[in-house]
Length: 186
Image (cartoon, rainbow, N blue to C red; front, side, top):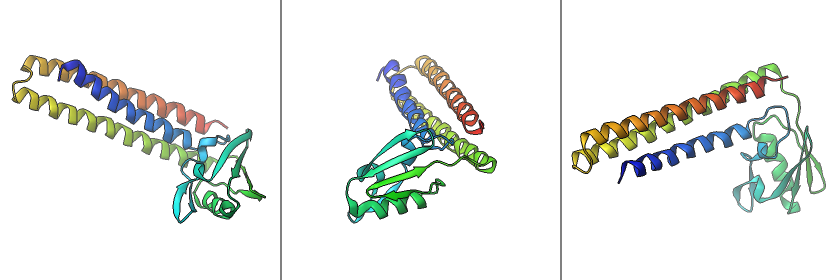
């Protein structure tokens, strides 16, 4: 494995952790309706727990309202219960096969709670990035031990990997700061 290939592979894996963080942040409620707010909701349907998006369509007709069109009338009550019990602080109202989900304003206490959740997601991402770095370093050290690469190449690649890691950790911090600002805006 050439040094470029090692660094490219590690970058791809670390970028995957950043993408996962973005998805986690997108699901955090900021007082404004977003269709992906309901991504974590699991509905008891067809004998299994399935994502809400497998039983209906989510739309955002207004900044403070989500609409969920349930495809199968038998799943309306289950979807309503799932949204209510998801811990998102949402209270859906049934209208035929349509669920209207008003998004209430966030209290100051809830905003602070959400910033802590965002910080937890960020720390998990930092740990994931460091684990990728550690795995990559282990592979490189094994290659050096097996005489696939020289000590000089190892040091140069280790430096590149550390620079990459530091840059992505900084990116996580920037994403967290932006999300905190978004959450705390009144």
